[in-house]
Length: 217
Ligand code: G3P
Image (cartoon, rainbow, N blue to C red):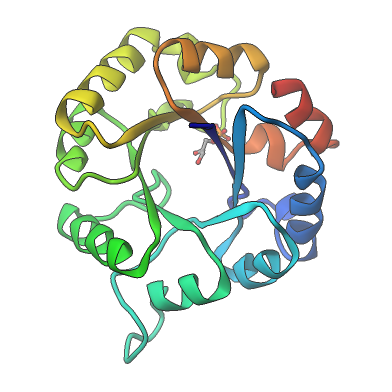
């Protein structure tokens, strides 16, 4: 099983609009046998990116609706149709109530979409493990966007998150994220038992994203 390296483009100007397609193309040139490289472009860019890349594409958010009368919501049926593989849910920048997460996960299963639920605390991990997502992503909010990686700042908590995830939902894989920017950070995450990482600004905002990703791998 390959480790997942999920690159969140957020709404960074360097990674939105035509830049999203360019960034996806640059990242797709990176060769690796150990990692599955996946990307999460902004919702408005999903369709165009899916059309132009072979990388696995995740949505940054989705709603528990299929096709139908659901104005302004992100339809799971449509995500599936355009070629999206899965979705991030409850990112620190897009929090959701538990009942909404639960409903969305069960509908994602019905639509054949993978789920990555972000968790900021151990309490979150315990709660979200109940819905057995494909991935939980431990991301302490205060470290997001910074230069200190969760693997350096909170290795003990990360280990606890790994154990808690395995205990509460053995089929769920644990990712970590926040401040991850180097090969050492990723190695440390794997050593601590994570199944992969979530990275945003270190790659999405880099002058040469392909080179940064190659260095990280
Ligand atoms: O979704 C990943 C993200 O929140 C971590 O952001 O910029 O600290 O890698 P960053």
